[in-house]
Structure formats: structure tokens, C-alpha cells
Image (cartoon, rainbow, N blue to C red):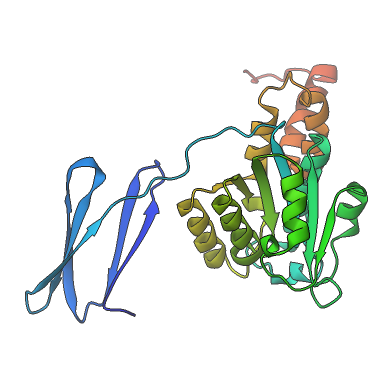
Length: 277
């Protein structure tokens, strides 16, 4: 480890949190002095009482921007049957459900959807047929070798031809296929929403680090439920409860069960002794 290093991330309440790590054989303590306008000075004290000072400016996360169903494109990136074996940060059956649910967002909201794979004739394999059957008319960019999908001209053209400025993305793996493309899209001026539920990595640590990297670049990292609810906005909209409750029943069974229980209670339920609202 380098004798002196810093790691920064946002705290749970949205404010900056400073995490310090250093070689204790060289430095025995550190102190942080807060200055005006969010600046601070970090001073590391060596064991011989010499000190080393560095400035730190806390970074801000991406500005809140609502997902506009009329201005967004959905990307399905390298959700290939071979690459599924590279996902170890969640259970395989849960991850498969999340991947299909991600593709289904495009269907239920009638979003322009682009499918892409990397070297699918090799060990990476093709997309699951559930996805290709769901989107038979979507652009399907089969990249021969490019790791970052944005390096492929056909893929870039497909995204640009949609005319949308917001992008929802998920892929395997989080740290490579999702992050590389998301970072490239941010550089191109798009607003990017990374679906964390439908992106997988070799470990939880790798996934967490990749999500931190994307957040630091201004990418919105959120759940499938958050993506869907922001697209819907109001249960009375279209798509609304009529379209989304069946979606949740299929892909988010906790909410599906909640809706089923409510329907059963209204249609034939009775209040038991001791029950109350």
C-alpha cells in the first residue's frame, strides 16, 4: 500500500464522508480541519512528528433529474447466458429475474430499447431468448470484439438515432460492461441511470466499487423499483396500476403479493377479532 492514500464516498444522508487510510508504520494519526465552502485540510502526522498536509474538496453526487418516459432509451448490455456465470453478488435465480425485469421495463413503458452483446459466438454466449422474444424488432448490435459498447459505431449510431437524452442501462459485468459504457455516455452529455438490480459482478465489493465510481462521475445508480416508479410517477397514469401491478406481480413478488392480499381482502375478506387498521 502507498504510505498515504485517501478514499472518499458519500454518506447515507447525502453529505460528504471522508474515509482515510494510511500506512501506520509511517503515520500514526491524522486530523481533518474543516474550512469554508466545503473545503478541508487533511494533515497526516508521521511517527517522527513531521507532518504531511493535503487539501480535500468533497464532491457532489449527480443533480436530481426525473426520468422522462418520453425522453429515455433502455439499453440491455451483455446480459449473455455465458456471462451470467460471472455474477456472484446475488443469487442466480434472483439475478435472472432482475435481468428479464430490466428488459420488460422497455416493453411496459414502450421505450426505445437497444440490445447488444459482446463476442456472443464465443464463451460469452447469446442473450436469453426471453429477452430477444420480448423485443423482436429492437436493434440488436452484436459486437465482435469491443468491450466498451460505445466503441462500436453501429451501437453509437443506434443510440443517437433514438434522439433521447436520458439512458437507462444495465449489464454484465457492473464494473466493465455497465460502468465503461455509462462513463462514456456521461462524457457524451447523456443523463445516465444505472439499474443496480440488473447489473452483476464477481463480488459485492467489486459491484460496490463500480457503483461508487459511477456515482462519482454523475451517474444515477438506483433499483429497478425506483426506475419503474419514476417512469410511472402516478398510479393513475398510463402506464399505471393497470399495467404495472401485473409487472410487479411477475418480477417483484413482494409487491405483487401485497396487491393480491389487498384484492383478496376486499373481495372476500373478513375482519378477525383483534384486527385493526
